Image (cartoon, rainbow, N blue to C red; front, top):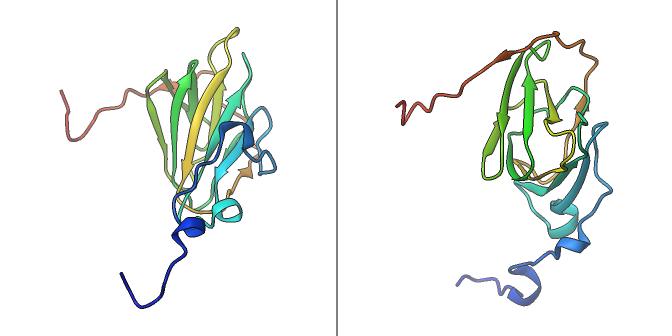
Length: 154
């Protein structure tokens, strides 16, 4: 399979137990992030993956993730996302939904429930975590944005 022998035992598939995630990662106020997959833990070059927990009725501060793309998968609870220069747009997602956040987009994650924890799985397009906190005064009533799938518009 090539000229250089590989130690597949130690350089192959890795399983990271859910109770051994690393909480020593950049976080945003109101949110607990934990890393499962990143450069430091497994040598990942092009992605970061972990979990995000937001307590009932809590919201993060406004932030963005620099040049990274992010995908959030909602496991439990209801997520409300706000984004834009003044966090003027909003959309919600529930269990089984995916959220895509493009590079440099100012955004805020909100737990839309006053009683249930919001639990998500998060993946980013680099092996290092980037979280840049922003000082944004949000608009009072954001505009709800309904997503229309360009490949399935109906």
